[in-house]
Every structure is written in structure tokens, then in C-alpha cells.
Image 1: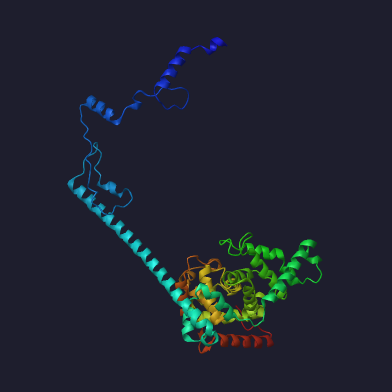
Image 2: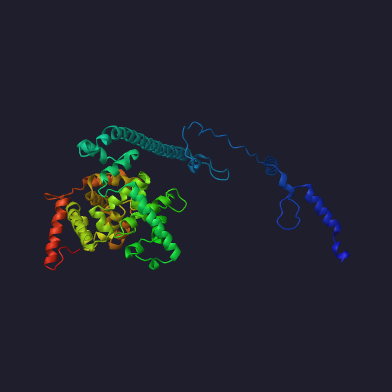
Length: 456
């Protein structure tokens, strides 16, 4: 075995000495580096000149682009470079044409850059202006309107200021005052129902079955801890503040749980978590519960959350009267596909647009909703349809339903409120409340005759 190991001892040593003498790159085995590896580009050039007798002049240091104030960060400048020596040189005409083309490209790029800079400047200017308007409006709300709420709330000046959106610092206070407290709920009453909810949750966990707890109604079972937990995890998931471990998770859980004990006839219904979450972001816990309970006690919300089909039908029928009045072409398009308002309106009304629209835009919708009442919810729906009318007219049933259940994320406050302002909530000489009353009367008469008054 010894002899086999030393078959080529001398050669191995030589290779080692070569390898250590000069650096080299190898993939497999011990391969000596190439002889010319360390040659510089200057040495290679000199050898080439000696071999061929040709002299390679270094390329002239072009200063043709040094005087430009602006150069596009791309390869467009290569058009000015001379061709390699092995190719025919550019003609004077071609060089001039390339210079002109390059100048045009530079001018176009500079124009785009200036346009983008103007756009950014305009956005910043609008933002500063908006902040100034909010600051000045906040002073008016705090010093003039809120101290004299009952006197000033219905004045033209206040209504116009209200339409522009409430300053975030006073939004919660104005919402509370506008919604009111007809139910006369106090913070102490909230604590009582919250304690009851906690006891019920404890009994659920101990028995591990809601059916084993005596006196638990169907509504209570539907409003179980598990269902509330599931919905909380889906509430504004991108904010991460209502999910487990977030700062508002327990507050949202408490308000929803307390409400199921306060109104077992309504219980918990999917969509409530979004309404409670928006209130939590603008009010203290007890105040948020008071506003939440009173808000859900309004006729429209009560009809939807109790799934009162006859009342929901009346709201849809009234909505369609104004739909046809304002957007007749789109109304007929929807009719041709038998696309009824319940397909898209239910989700919008259930969450008061807080799930369908960006949060800041949804809050502005809430601002005017608190001013105008349920009518504005349906006016907002018509505003959305008006905003996307041209797109919807090109769609079929499936695509319309998909589009309206997941609206574009880039919808802006200015565009939407411009469309909402263009919606006329008056049919002939009748306003929303009068049309709704008329629909109620028609449906009652239809019930007496055992025939539906309105069929979608």
C-alpha cells in the first residue's frame, strides 16, 4: 500500500509548489493557474500592439454629457457613444440625429420629473390646507357649536360645516350628541350587563355546552362567546388593534358581550363588531356602549339586525324609487339581470359602510349619517352606484355582485361625496320619509289583498 501512495511523489510536490507560488481558481483537483492570469490590461494591450503592429489609441474622454443639468438614469445615453472600432463609424447625419433623439429623451424625462414634482407639491399643499381647515373647524366646534348644541345643530352654517367632515378630536362627542340616549343607559348600567356577560361566559366554559345552561334563549346561543370571538378576529384585521393581544380586543369583546345581555331579543349578529369598533376608536368604553345600543335601536338598524324581512323589503323598495329617479339607465340594467338591492345593500347597511369603505372615508359617511339619519345611508349607496355607473353598465350579474361586495380600495372622499351630493333624495315632490310612508301604505294594502305590493 505504501508504494501505491508514493507513485507520483515528485509531481505532487511540484504541483504544490506551483499552487502556492501564484494564486489561481480551480474547480476540481489541484490545477495550476494560467500563465497570463496576472497580466494587466496595459500589458495585454502592449503585447497585442507588438504582435500586430497596430496601435490602440485610448478612447477620447467624452465630455459631451457633462454640461447637462439632468440625465435620465437609464441606458438612453448610450445612443451618443461611438461604435466599436471593428464597426463602421457613424456618419455626421447619424450622429446629429442621435444627438437630437437623445436631447428629446432628456427633455421628456425632465418634463416627467417636473410633472411628478408638481404633483407631489400639490398633494402636500392640499394636505396642509386640509390640516388647517380641520384645525380651524375644531376651534369652531369646541368654542361655538358644542356649548350651544341644541340651538346651533340645525343651522345652515353648522350643517354645511358638518358635511365637510368632523374634526377627529370632536367626532366622538358630536356622534354621541347626534345619536342621543333615548334608552337612558348609564355607565353603571353598562357595568351591570358586562358583569352578567362575564358570568355567562364563565358558565359556558364550565359546562362546555350552551345547551346545558338553563334559561338560555336561542338568541343567546347565537350570540355565544365563540361567535363573538370569531368576528372580533375579522374586525379591521389590517389594524391589528382588535385582534387577540391588541389594545382594543378586550374592550370590543366587552361591549359586544354586554349588548347581548342587554338586548337578548336581538343578540349578536355578524357585522355588529365593525360598528362597535368604529365607536371604540372615537369614544371611551362606556360612552361607546351607550352610543352603540342607541344606534342599533334606530328603526333601520333594528329592522336589519332583527332580520325583519317585511321592513327590509320596504327599505329596499324605497331605495329603488330613488335609484330609478337618479340613475335610470343603471336601474334598468340591474333590472334586466334581476339584480335586487339586497345583494349589495345588506352588507353596506349592516356595517354602516365601515367594512366596505376605507376607514377614514367610512367615518366621514358616519358624520353625515349622524346629521341626516337613515336616509343618508341609502343616499351613500346611490352615490357609490353613480361613481361606478360607467363600469357597472358594462358588467353582467356575477361581476356586478362581485364588484359591489368588494369595492375598489382607491375610492376617495372627494369623488364619493361629489357623487353623493349629485343624488337628489326627492321623488316628484316627495322626500325620503314621505316615499317610505307611501311604500309602507302600499305594502299594507297589498297584504290585505293577499298580494305582494312590490316584487323585485
